[in-house]
Length: 266
Ligand SMILES: NC(=O)c1ccc[n+]([C@@H]2O[C@H](COP(=O)([O-])OP(=O)(O)OC[C@H]3O[C@@H](n4cnc5c(N)ncnc54)[C@H](OP(=O)(O)O)[C@@H]3O)[C@@H](O)[C@H]2O)c1
Image 1: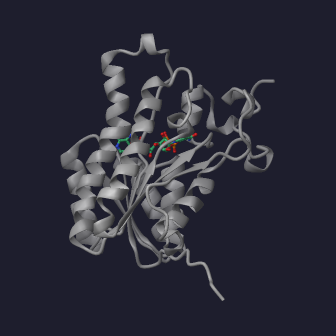
Image 2 (image 1 turned 120 degrees about the vertical axis):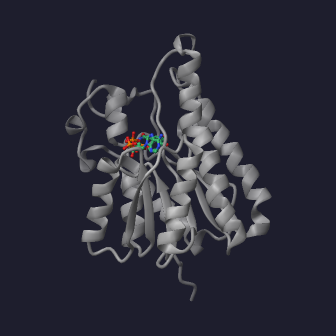
């Protein structure tokens, strides 16, 4: 009988943007699955406690917190170096750090455009090239990029974000072909609306006002919904998946605004 293998135990993962939200969920899930995780954000005060929580938990994997702004290539190099020094390798890279602000295209300044493209796309390039070097020189690995349904379909007010997230999908497809010879699989997740502090901030609401999981009717998701898919893609069970974008969006939104999905308006 064939048994599916979702095991990540003994692997080393880098998860960017793991001080909260989806990245925090992915880091905790992989650690619970036995992977060691190097987690980063721009602030040790914010990412340090997540690592402490993992290390104080029953999780088999260990956590290392590294302060790293993924927009700064030298800091990303330091993240990779610290990961290898602590855990000896990089097997899994989760390019999760990202963000946005909502504005009509004509109101986005050159600086605003560059900031969003730099944060979402260029940071993914830095992390992938630098962690990828370790994978290419070693036994290969798995790279998982965070796109968005807004990188697959138009969303008003998100031209900069959508363009950067669409580019991540094509980068994923290209690298899956280019790096197959090194034993590196590259896949992408396109989340729908996920309840995170970042979404609450974008909507200008208090995270406390967002509905609990059991009341969402699967129209919004939770970090764990993305973390489960990330673990699958990182595991041997996904060995035949390469260059794919997995959409994870629950019940499709049928013209609802995000606020309607969140139950904040009729
Ligand atoms: N939530 C959704 O509905 C949704 C939907 C589709 C796609 N996504 C994507 O999923 C990813 C995570 O989203 P989220 O909602 O969990 O975001 P979030 O709540 O805003 O959290 C973002 C994380 O990224 C970190 N971060 C931001 N800028 C960084 C930088 N320059 N260097 C290092 N870390 C940085 C933040 O930490 P610090 O502030 O401590 O630096 C934080 O840990 C993003 O790529 C986002 O575009 C989210």
